[in-house]
Length: 416
Ligand code: HAM
Image (cartoon, rainbow, N blue to C red; front, side):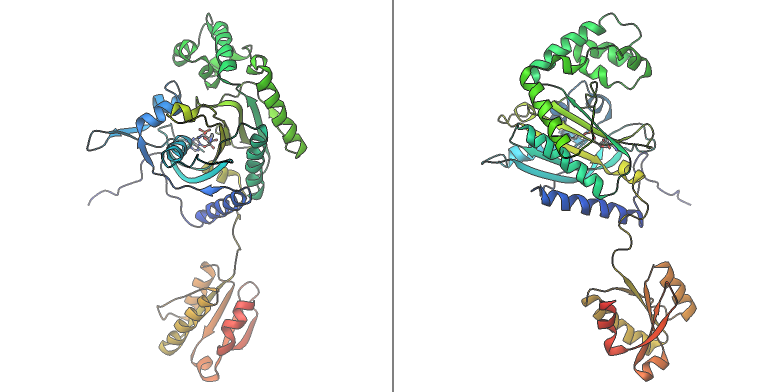
C-alpha cells in the first residue's frame, strides 16, 4: 500500500473551526484599515531573489539562512517571499503608485516563508497582516501607524501585551553608532561565530543575536539613543509624545533593532505576555531608505506586520463565533425532503444560513447532525406537517418547540 503523503515540516493546515477565528482577525484588520484610509494590494508569493537580498540585507538571518530560494526552469533565481515590505515597494515602484501627493496607504495579507527551526509559534509558512504607509517622514505618521496596529490588536481582544519602541536614527546616526558598537565589540571574547563576523560587517546585527552569551556581553553595549542627532531625537520624542497623548502605553527598548536591515528611525514590536520564546506578535518601523535602495526615488515610509499564527495562540477561543444564526431542516420522507429543499433555498435567499441532510435518515440521526453543525433552530417537516401545512420549529438551546405555518417560516426565521 502506498504511504500517505504528509505536509512539509513547519507548514500546516489551518482547519475549521480555527479558520473562523482567522476570518474574524482579518475582518477586524480590514475594518481598521478602511477607517485609516488603507487599500489592499495582492502580490505574488515569488519574487526575484535579488529583491530580498537587497532590501533585507545580506547579513540578516533571513537572507543568510532562511530563504526558500531556487532557480526556475529558465534558470532565474527566485525566492518565496520571507516578508512583504520588499514586495510592496517593488509593486509600488513598478506600478507608479508612489506618484501624486499624499501618503500612500497599502495593506496586504498572506503567507510568508522562512526556513527556520519550527517550534511553537514559529513556522516555515506563516501568515502576516502587513501595513505600509509611504510618502512622508512626519512623526505623526509613525504615531498613526502604531495607533492603527494597537487598534487592530484591541479589536481582536489581544490580552496583556507590551509595545516596545526604539529609534534607529538616520543612516548618519547609524553609521556613528555602528562605529561605537564595533569598537565596544572589538576585543570581546566568546561571541558566537555569526557575531564574530557581524561585528565588522554589520555590528547592528549583533544586537539582534539570540545567543545567551552574546546577550550577556551586550548588556554594557552602547545604546542607539545616545547617538541620535537632534533631528532624529526630536522625531522620536514627538512620536512618543503622540503615543502618550492617545493613551498608548509603551516601553522604550534601547536595544531593539529588529531582524531586517532596512529600518531607520522608529522601530517597534508588540510582544504578547504568555507566548514563550516566540512572543513578538507584530513588528515594524520606518524604512526611509528602502525605495532608493530598490532603484526608486526618495520615499520615506513606515509599516508593520502582524504575525497571525502567533496572534491566534493568545486570542480568545470563541473569537468570531456566534455570528449569525443557523437553521437545520430535518425532513422525514421524500415529499418532506422535496419541500424542505425548496424551503432551504428560500431561507438562504432571505439571508438565513441553513443546512439539511439529504440522506432521508431517522429524526434522531438528523437531530444529532443539527447539533453537530451548531444549528440554533431546527425545522422538522414530516407527513403530519405536510398535511397540516405547519412545521415544528425547535430552539436547540432550550428544546422549546412551536408550530409555524410553512408559508411563514422564511419570514419568522429571518426575524428571529
Ligand atoms: P518581522 O518582525 O520579521 O517583520 O515579522 C513580523 C511578525 O511576523 C513577527 O513579529 C512575528 O509575529 C511574525 N513572524 C515572523 N517570522 C515568523 C515565523 N517563522 N513563524 C510565525 N510567525 C512569524 C517583518 O516581516 C517586516 N516586513 C514588518 C514590516 C512591515 N516592517 C515595515 N513594514
